[in-house]
Amino acid sequence: MTASPARERPRNATQTRQLLLDVARHRFARHGYASTTVREIADGAGVNVALINRYFTSKEGLFQACLQTAIIDLKRDTDGIALADVAASIAYRLTSPADDPALLDALLLLVRSSGDERVDAMRRTVLHSMSERLAVAAGAPQPPDADAVLRAQIVLAASLGVALMRASVGLQPLASATEAQMRGPISDLVSALT
Image 1 (tube, rainbow, N blue to C red):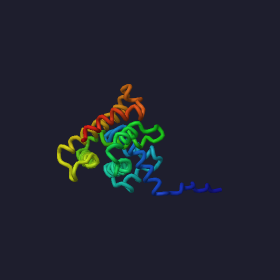
Image 2 (tube, rainbow, N blue to C red):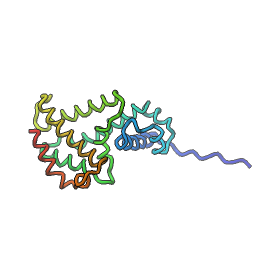
Image 3 (cartoon, helix red, strand yellow):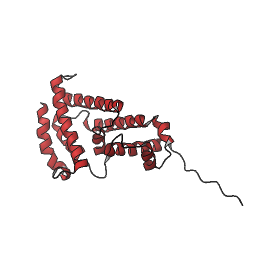
């Protein structure tokens, strides 16, 4: 009597790639680039570690893909938004519901130190681009001048700092503040853009 061959799980490259992105994005956001291993990501996704190289070439390539998806998520919420709605959008993202941690992970991904200069350069490029878009949303000409970008970067830095304080430090009452509670102070901050 011969043993029947093990049944192979049907492969779906698109789902596997997305699963790797989701796990990696969460781990990079919560634990940082240097502290996250490709083995942890693969194990979290329940796949062979070799698939990371197949789909993303390397850990750095996977991180870059995570940054790109974070940018897409952030742009979806901010492109074409009126200045009056910026504070509400930031408050929503900072207090994202527990059932959608990807919203907060997108912000955290942008502030966690990587320990790798090339990865940090990617992050700086993304943050600069976001600052310019925010400055333009506030009425600055395109391309915005240095003063407008500085104001936008201060708002962005404060928002990212809030995300980090809520997720990592748990400082109260900031960590448990609701979207409605955050909207007023963030509106005050955003008003500094104009």
